[in-house]
Image (cartoon, rainbow, N blue to C red):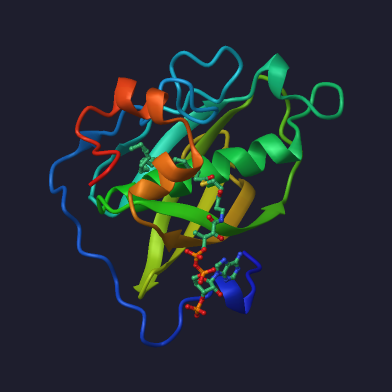
Length: 181
Ligand SMILES: CCCCC/C=C\C/C=C\C/C=C\C/C=C\CCCC(=O)SCCNC(=O)CCNC(=O)[C@H](O)C(C)(C)COP(=O)(O)OP(=O)(O)OC[C@H]1O[C@@H](n2cnc3c(N)ncnc32)[C@H](O)[C@@H]1OP(=O)(O)O
């Protein structure tokens, strides 16, 4: 993976402490999310889980709706898969983050019909900044890496989503979320 200094953890970065100790299915954080929403008609439908509390695994089956060149996955869709699985891997620590920067390496073409085996993990946290990496392998979980990514996520307050997003949709799905805490 080629990554810039912006997505490389500084020397003072700390490893996050796992909260989950049992294998756990993570589910969708929002039914209409392009990455994980079960109600999204053409989304990625990632169904992620963790086995160790500090990394996430999921599969993405590249469909007709995800093409760029005929018969091949669109690079932006592959980047979205990286973004989503990385977002899930930092959500493991139950603090809200958003993507600040996402760097993606496209190593091999990914044909429609391919199952991409995704994995993401955190390489360090420093203040509000979380440093993360992800990869997508083809042919199996240990197959060749087709796409890889490094990211900088920034911790936000929960009201970030209410302030900038759809409060009614949040209220409908996140009953434990206080719009005006
Ligand atoms: C309750 C309903 C909500 C439910 C969701 C809740 C939680 C999440 C739940 C589940 C998650 C599960 C799955 C994951 C889901 C999705 C994955 C995809 C995630 C996304 O797809 S999310 C959408 C795309 N994302 C954005 O929509 C961000 C837009 N943006 C901003 O909202 C601001 O830009 C923000 C907040 C990032 C920063 O703004 P800010 O004002 O708070 O802070 P500031 O600018 O001071 O930055 C602080 C320090 O970060 C450095 N920094 C910032 N950006 C940088 C960059 N790009 N490169 C290098 N360094 C950067 C600064 O240089 C400074 O560094 P220093 O402290 O050293 O000076």
